[in-house]
Image 1: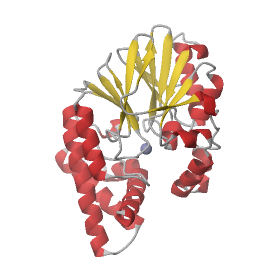
Image 2 (image 1 turned 180 degrees about the vertical axis):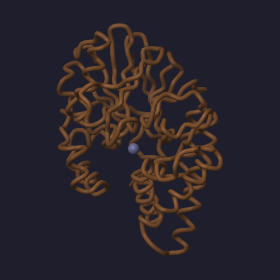
Image 3 (image 1 turned 30 degrees about the horizontal axis):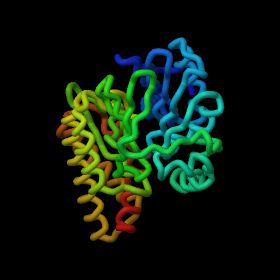
Length: 317
Ligand SMILES: [Zn+2]
């Protein structure tokens, strides 16, 4: 963890903060500023807290001015730091999807679930203990709800597909969608010229391809100019991202179904197939000139998580 925060200031009072989970450039959260008011979308982990506060300070904002904390969903790279953040923001209210709220108030089950996904060593070094948020500071938001940040309206959209406890925030000032994981993952290291590489995070345990396709189409109805991805940063090729994400979800389903038919191997073998597919896309379609070992290192953890999520999906389908 660096002591000096790294962030990008975009237009419209939006800043993308690197939450420094696992490595730089992997996960972010966003600060939205409107006049005297501020809000965070996603929180990183409790280890990210000093970084978020530095960026708040750098913009001349006090902790008292933060009105909303909005974890897009309760996976720990997005909401793990919510409890610690809420402790230091006296006037903030936590806005959570109805399926996620109980986990923010009593995080034990969430912690146990994440321990199972990441393993104890990795979990402890990255996420640590989760702090509960007092019930009266948690407000459930539902599809279509709108909150005000000064004179700025933020609208919540229910976005199942990656997780059933996921919402996306529509910001009409920037014409941007704060997408969490609902619009896929695109790492800056894999940009090549105009080409971007995007893939669906099929993390356990609620991957739902049909719902995800509908979610993408629904999000496009807002005619967004930008998507703000937690992994990673703001992007303006929204239409292209949507097409590619649809294709990648379908490709994942095909790979998973073939894998199930062959009935050979487990998550390790499926992860290898996903990696092969990703490398193929990157080297052929995106013409990325990066050593294959470097691509593998960069995507290794994601492919493992994606394989675990797909196996879970195959079993409960
Ligand atoms: Zn997630």
